Image (cartoon, rainbow, N blue to C red; front, side, top):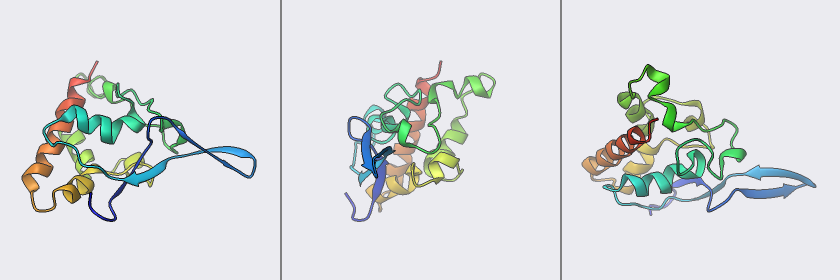
Length: 141
């Protein structure tokens, strides 16, 4: 783990924070943990499932606490005339294209975080992004 590298997630279930007698759900920020770059399943579960859900449908334990609801990642192909938008997904994950939820403080773009995990190894960062994109493609309905 690199110092100062944080990402938004939930550990297990949504964190409820009670303030001034009213229930307010918040997303807990924890230090980023490294995963195997060759395991898209491990990366998805570690970095994406807290918001998008293990099934990618947008119902992860942190979803209710976010300002913008997470996308249903299983519908990307259907929403793009039957073609999975691989290039767009890659650009979103790496941070080249801005998505409102990913650009907020609630959900980070993963490219900069992946680069921080392997700062002197651009091929590993590219592998992480490519594997994650392929995994999201495999989830399509």
